[in-house]
Length: 303
Image (cartoon, rainbow, N blue to C red):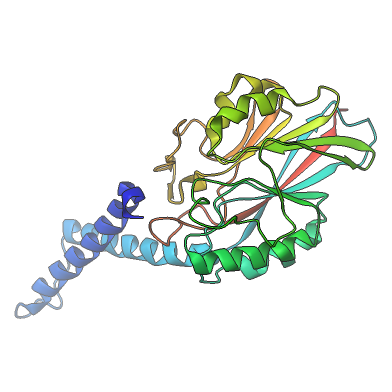
């Protein structure tokens, strides 16, 4: 996947390593001189050394963070839920990018089950290789046993067999499913990324009297005029940047809408969209200030 490597991610790693080497070299040169062991480093040398060590620590942490699974909980309201009704609980997973290495995949089912979701959705990018496909399917079989599960394919999901084959996941390809949850009628639909022409008509099919959910991999789905009709749009793809910086956020999103919808909950004209930072990784096996997440979305009636 060298063609999709993030230049920003590579630069973070490169400058961190260079800074560390430079700092250590400066210290070694000074220490090699006679009677220099007791001499203090200059402010510049100290700054370079500390910057290098900090950068090195950040790089090391970047390889640790992918093992830190978090649950993100958000709440939205809807007039389509009768007053006093039980909230709708939806779990969103995205961008597992399974690669054969078990980081948090084995924790997903045991973490999701106590959340007691009414339904689970997956918004694309299952695996990075053939070993990952097998791991993904095993993971989804466990997860689907918790609650009805629906999914759409992402841009990495067209390299071979159907990623949802041999799993109970309901694959959405523009044909909606109708559910009734706690007395509330729910319409759920979605489109794989290789059928962008189906996004608009599929959204237009959403009934006005049901709470509607639409799944797509790219945040660019929000650009469809019919997105104004959707109560909840669930997407992924950006990884929240995968590497985020304080006060800056995502360094790169690989998204058509750039940083406008890079991560989190966005309130749209009518409904809401959640862009999840997902579970796995592409390019480099690191995450920084963007740990893997399970998203729990609670939909409650308006007061």
